[in-house]
Each structure stands twice: as structure tokens, then as C-alpha cells.
Length: 127
Image (cartoon, rainbow, N blue to C red; front, side, top):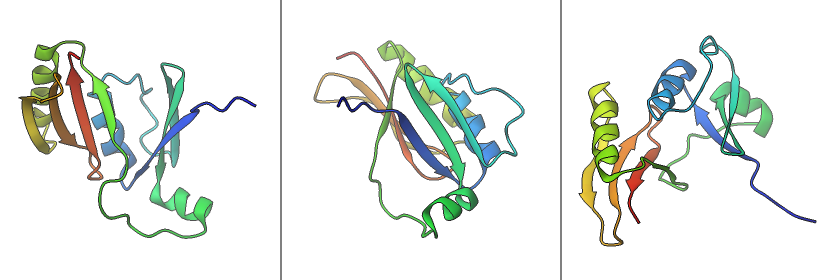
């Protein structure tokens, strides 16, 4: 049996706000799904899904707001300048920057932003 990653699910309180944010990361999310309880798209062979807390409450049989950061999503911005440009575009749209771009000790250009639900999203380039 071969096991492979199939889906990355993101819990959201406001679907429209979340989809707007992830479109800033160039995810091809079709318009017109802002009122849905579940949205998914394929990105590089892996499905990304957004589910509202109401949907997840049904799926899980309950819901408790999570605390802390447990999973990181990192988006390769192609170039070091791309990290800076993507960070500026996202923060310029009113989203919170968690850490401005810097040259990380492991050799990448790195920055961290928050999605509308407080998830930390890394932007990186250059190994």
C-alpha cells in the first residue's frame, strides 16, 4: 500500500476573507465560492480545502477553537525579491505581517504573514 498526501485542510471562520487571502498567494480559486461551506482546489497534485467552522463542527462532532501554531504552510515565491514583493502585496491588502522578510540562517529569504484565521503562512525562496 502506498500512502501519499492528498489534502491540506484549512479551518476558516470567514470563507470569503480566507479565499481572498489565498488568492494573493496565486492559488487559482474560482470566484463565486465565497458563501460555500467547503471549497477545494488542486495545487501541484495536492488538494487544498477550506472548510467553515460550521462544516467542521458537523464533521468532527464538535469544535473547539485551536490555540497555538501546529502546522506550517510555506509558499515558494521563486526568488528572494519575490518573497519581498509577495509580503508587501499581502500586508498592503490589510493582512497582518508576522515577520518581515529576512535572510534566514538556513540560506533562504523568508517572511511570515497571518491568514484571516491567524494561521502563520511562510513565504520563502532560495535554498
